[in-house]
Image (cartoon, rainbow, N blue to C red; front, side, top):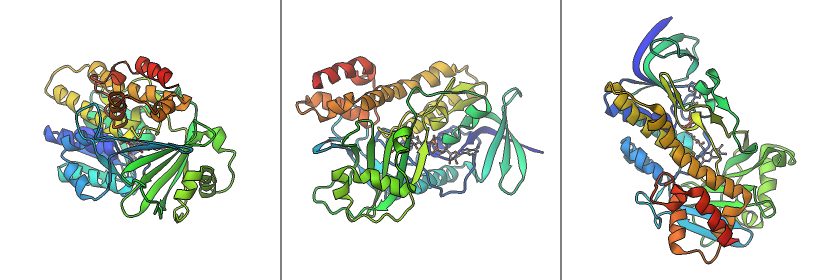
Length: 408
Ligand code: FAD
């Protein structure tokens, strides 16, 4: 078999992989990206957070994203029964971007991968990574192309950005169970036909199920009159609903009167899909010759739309560590990569736990909220989960618990 060489091999051309590729190219590295699918391909994870803009900018990809014409986004709205509250991300505690986009991922991921290619990465589609040899002096990866050819790549370092493919965590048995109960999501894209006055297309809309506080819906408006709609619940709850995925999703959406009214003119033109058991964790985010980026490492929960932001943040941290490593310095991947990355992930985890126990819902719907506290919460919802100047980051568990008590 043929053996190829590169400085950094990246598995997967999602947001984590493309942003990492661009950042490494700026350091003068030879980067090879191997992607299993042919692009454009569907992916879930469509509502971005403003914090992600910083990393798209760092990677020199922001102009391409802006010019693609995605739906502008400036906040998040929450609905439960007749209660409504919204957060404008521009009015937030942390410095940095206050707006972002809601994107069809087929197009968004293609824009980023094309940018990585334009900047000098080799991106190969329909090339699947099938094996990893960590014992060799340099990490070696086995690849299979859809035409049947197989080859080996020997790299200075491997970044696993394979998302839910979790290539290295499967091959190296790094997986550990997530602490969250097993939840699933049913979702689709619709032509929404929403003509309700005052409906804000610039915000993701999160609706809590009228009876079950741990069941919720997302409505993510796109440019061009379409939107993404989905429901999240424990799998045991979802299993009660029979029929096709589209019928199950429609039944669940119609249980909420406000959603039913909002979507009365909707055209359900795309079959719904279901994904279950997406939360995952790993023993370690790095090892000899490799690191895990984005979803290939850990995935929490979709409720705060944090996935892409964590993915591009991880790409930025890994690229910085690799810059030092290729310069011949010793890098401690635990303290320079894993710990800093997990800091923000843990902030989100605190809020995810509180969302499902109902505490955070009391906080956001509380009517006498102090403006400064709301600005701190808005910063977290905007993705600034690594900013220690925010008390809800620095001491997120303790502060959120106190706030829940005040709002109860
Ligand atoms: P991905 O985008 O998954 O990219 C990985 C790529 O690797 C894929 O293209 C795949 O084809 C490729 N690959 C896999 N295996 C191999 C292999 N063996 N060889 C080569 N290539 C391979 N996040 C948000 O930010 N906002 C949201 O609103 C949001 N909503 C979500 C809703 C749900 C129900 C779920 C489950 C997740 C949601 N997420 C959301 C999370 C989001 O989907 C992910 O966090 C994000 O896509 C991770 O990006 P990534 O670059 O790590 O991986």
